[in-house]
Amino acid sequence: MTARTRVSPHLKWLLNERAALRGEVDALFAREERTRAELAAIAAERRIRESRLAAIERILAGAESNVACPNVVCAWKGRYGERGALQAFLLQTLTDHAPHALDTLMLLELVVNRFELRMETAAERKRYCDNTLRPTLRKLQSEGLVEALRTRRTGRSVREWRRIVPEISLSELRRSTVEAF
Image (cartoon, rainbow, N blue to C red; front, side, top):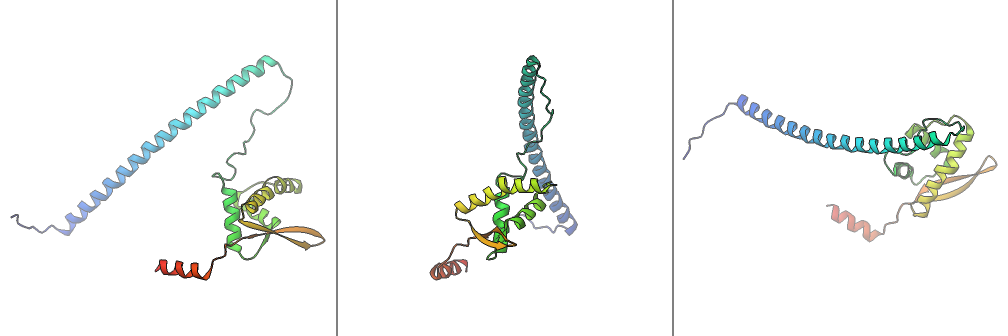
């Protein structure tokens, strides 16, 4: 049988700190390895794009075209962050305001502010509404997640959108409360 010895609190603290720091160092090492792998994948993707660009530039040089075009065009891909972020934002916004409806113009302002979009003219805002916002809302409507309401304001028709909250029966409500406890 081994004799029990008392360890000073200072030593216990040092041992605990050492174990915690080793865990943090291991986690940082794993994160560093993941980042290296990500960087390698990004570099490979860049090399592919560069080779495509070089091929297109060779073709254009041989064509001797007089068409003026910019060298760089800003891509729209990823404009809202992750894929589906616009839909998720609209659903969350309408859920937060449920059971009240929000009109398309209010949703447009919220989207512009949330995703920091630059629309300087009324024509740009209308084009965005017609080509992006309304189709996204219609898609959510076709999936049964939102409903469109028509209202009359200032002599023109404004569509309002409301989140459809699934109806729950009393028995389902009881079952969910019993399961929660």
